[in-house]
Length: 115
Image (cartoon, rainbow, N blue to C red; front, side, top):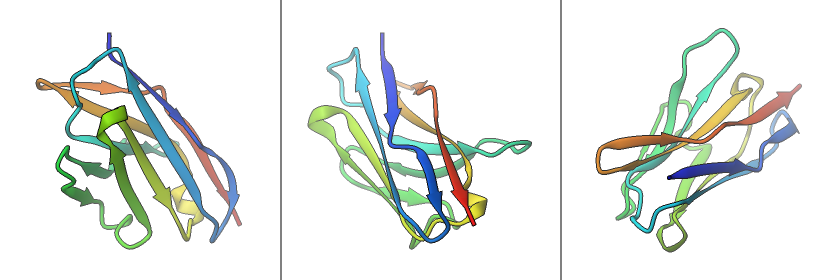
């Protein structure tokens, strides 16, 4: 059974940085793409960024230039470096990975940005 476990969330001041990590277990197949979504209170879940096994990336407009997604395929792990954080980045961040057309999700990690 594929499981994704996120870590690295927390409380940070506006302008600060956080690095999220997500490790997949239960599979020897490399998940691709892997990515991050987020959901703020009262809002729909939205794409943050994705990355394929060969390193092709895709970012939401709000993430472009501030966030960087990367991965370690050997470890089936994906990272999200978030810089210049804003209050509106406050949300639960979810990791996702795809294997043979099936999407798997982590339990989410809270990111709170204070002013």
